Amino acid sequence: MQEKFIDFKLYTSMNELHLFERKIVISEEVRLYLSKVFYDMTALSPHDSSTYEQMRLLAKEKYGIVVQQSHLPN
Image (cartoon, rainbow, N blue to C red; front, side, top):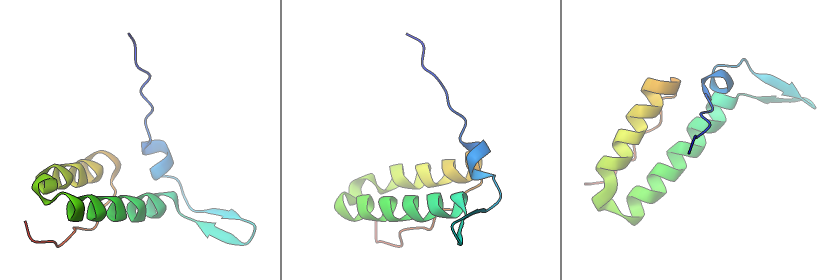
């Protein structure tokens, strides 16, 4: 089986978009979404916090998105 690989770096490195008098920064939207998801998942299953930390570092390394740390006790 072959999997298609989509490189999202193109989208996260785009300049801001102006759509109907609204400014949209895709990398900021992704950062906020990932911060919320990683926080929620760490709160629900603290034993997996190291996994979410690795995913956070991967987002920074691969896409240049700095995801906020959850600041929950391990």
